[in-house]
Length: 247
Image (cartoon, rainbow, N blue to C red; front, side):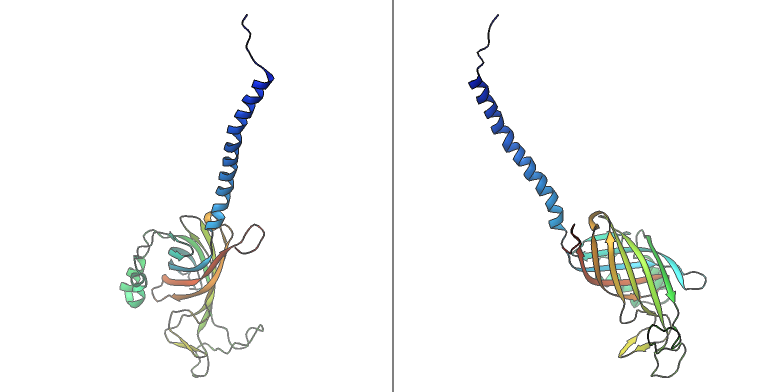
């Protein structure tokens, strides 16, 4: 039988050579894994954001609530779209609000190529002065005095934007002039079927690429083409990191 010439010295040399190959590979694998886990966080940067939307809200029998469908185009710190928006410019996006009658409604309906479910809305008619005790409200529906503020309804909506990269949970609140006449609020005149001067929105979270997303800002709404409503939101967004702080 032929004996192999195999010594402890040669075995040690072979193991050392193998280790020289394995260790760099291991380091490369660890480095790559760490980079892949860090890069998504580095890409999740907050900043200014603009959300252009058209929202379809067929009102209930008493005109005080509705389910909502929408399409949106998001730009800035987030770039995404939902519901196949058809506009290609700011001018085209706002065009239906410059029109009137059935032509305006038809133009608004054409802004969404494939509207998707978004949520719901609630409308609360204007209170009488002193009706609620949480604070003063100098407003009387139908009042004729120019010194009285009248006609602003409360508007609240919780909606989801179904983006291509994930979902965004959006809450919006405001007053709305649902009358056919201008309503003066302090030094601001609110045009018919538009939002009051303190319309706000917040983002409370999301899924997919928007997990941990938060944000806030203001918005302008125009319901003159009801059941289609124009909604332009601007503000900022940020991400919550694993420690609960903003990043």
